Image 1 (cartoon, helix red, strand yellow):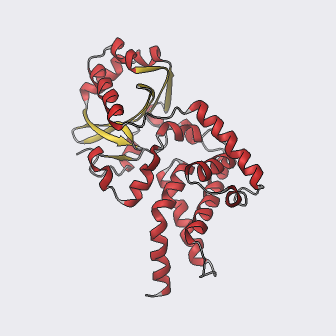
Image 2 (spheres, rainbow, N blue to C red):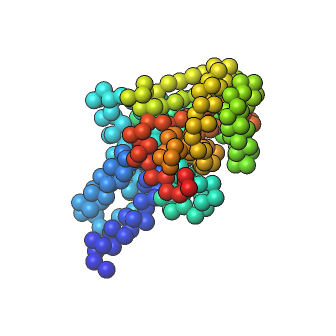
Image 3 (cartoon, one colour):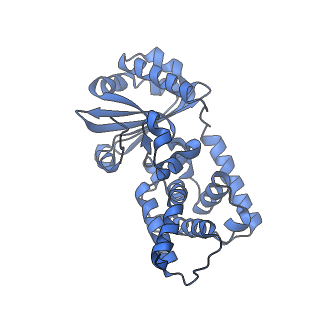
Length: 298
C-alpha cells in the first residue's frame, strides 16, 4: 500500500474516537469535523512517520485544536454555545447497537445535552482537563502539556470542573426502559394538557431549555417544576400538531417530532431518580435541517 494511503487508513481507524473527543469539547458536530480535519492536516504534514502511539498523538492534537477553537470563540466575542443548545446526536432505540462506529462513539457513556450545556460554562482549560481525564481516561501527565500547565495544576482544573458538573448536571438514571416510561408518561400528559400529570413527573428543580433559533427568540430557559408544568398548553399544542417518534438523543430517551414528514423538533430528557430533571428542546429550523437523523424518524 502507498505510504500516504496507509497513513490515511490508520487515521480513519481513529476517527470515531477523535469525533467523540471533539464533540464533547465543542458541543458542535460541524466544529468537531473541522477539528478532525485539522488533525489530519497536521498528521499529513508531520515528518515523523514512526509515531509509536498514533491514537494518543492524535488525541493530543485534537485536544490542542479544540482548546484553540474554544479560546478563539472568547477572543472574537462570539455568542457562547451556552446561549444555544449543543447539537444533538439522534438515533432510533432499536438501531443503537447497529449504529456505525462514529455514532456509537458519540453516544457512548450517555453524555446528554444537559451535561454538554454545563461544559459550556467551564473555562477552555477546565473543559479540556475534565473531558480528557474524566470522560476518556487520559493521565494528567498527557493533559498537562496541552494546557501548558503542570500535571498537578491540570488535576486541579479537572477537579474544579468536576465540582461544577456534579452541582449542575444531574446524572441520568441508567435504566433505558425506566427513562422511556417517564418520557411516555410525559407525552401522555402533554397531549392532554394535564398540569398535575406533568407536575408529578418533574423534579422540583427541573430546567427546561427551548432553542428555537435566532429568528424565533433564541434560547428560552424555564426553571422549577410549577413553571415548567405551566407550559402545559404549549406542550399540548405541540404534541397534537406533530407526529412523535421515540428516539435516543445523546444516548438518552427522547422524542423526535415531525410535521408532514419534516423535522419540527428534537426533545432530550434527563431522567434522574424517576423524574425529569432537564428537558431540552431544539426547534431551530436552520440547525434541524443540518442534522443527519438517518432512520431515527422513520
